[in-house]
Image (cartoon, rainbow, N blue to C red):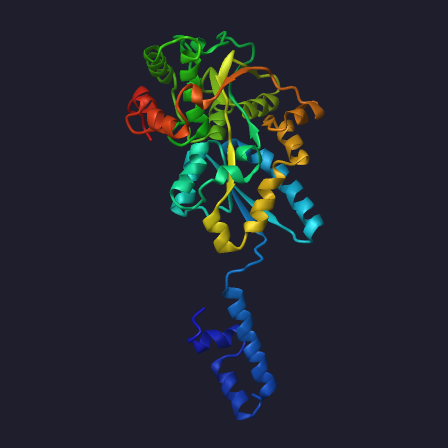
Amino acid sequence: MNFTDSTRIDSTFGVNRRSRSVIRSRGWLNLSAMAAVVAGFALIIAKNLPSSTNNKLVNVSYDPTRELYQNLDLAFSTAYEKRTGRHIIVVESHGGSSRQARSVVSGEQQADVVTLGLFSDVDLLRKQGLIANGWADRLPNHSRPYTSTIVFVVRRGNPKGIRDWPDLIQDDVQIITPDPRTSANGKLSALAAWGAIVTRGGSETEAVKYLKTFYQHVPVMDRGARDAAMTFTLEEIGDVHLTWENEAIREVAEARGMLQIIYPPVSILAEPYVAWVDANVARDGTLAIAQAYLQFLFTDQAQATIARFGYRPYKQRIAGDTGVQLHPITLFPITAVARDWDDAQQKFFAENGIVDSAMGPRPE
């Protein structure tokens, strides 16, 4: 509001210029009325100042976590209100993890917390000055509330006989996997494919050849995991879908017997990370609730929910306690294919990196 515009101020209180002159002429603008006007001005000013008791929390997350956080948000809000008397509304945003990270950096999304699919996506915010150095050590388990991996989803009866990574590049197989330029699922699928070669005795030359052939079998690339799932399940494109384990479990459950999960002998250890966005919570006065929200993810209550939705909780006993049976699979860490995530980002996903070269020219 422009406080020099008397017409707008008066209209706020339901008083126009003419009625104001009538009030003056009749001597009605006494001290009580003046006090009311001053109080009204104070309310307007207070309303336009930043709130230190913001009850909204924005969580910018990666693509397939919608159902998980719908449940976690409700549980957190209920527990937090019971403990503090304060009702919190959690607003969710979902999309390809790398694209989500860039949208927070650009200011397109004003995240209080990020719960993204890759260390490198969260650390991008640190490099841009939005998150403090040492952010990963502020929460339990190096800020990883759960892990996951990449598995295969195939049509009923597995008509192409897909069991392992070499089976993906048979002549008549089409692979559905999202774009590694925008999606953590896409990046992890590429790294899993590469690692399936080099961790089992293959050379990097052989891995490059495999990855090039792999991408020749990918007819379309969606921006995120959920879009890729819709391409595979609803549009019925492709013979095998490479996706997060939790997303595979959801897909198969909703397909009612039309799909099945195949666990390859080896895949990558996927480690999603969470953090509060220091610059944004300081500005919005949401630090306390952001911290409480992320700390909640590591409680037994939240860990049980995480297990039930097909993620691998960091408290491994919780999965057993909830009756969830997670399929055994050999998982290799990022250090099996690169020094760390910074190295992997440069080696595989930078312009003209291994994956960029293997994919060749593709439409955005």
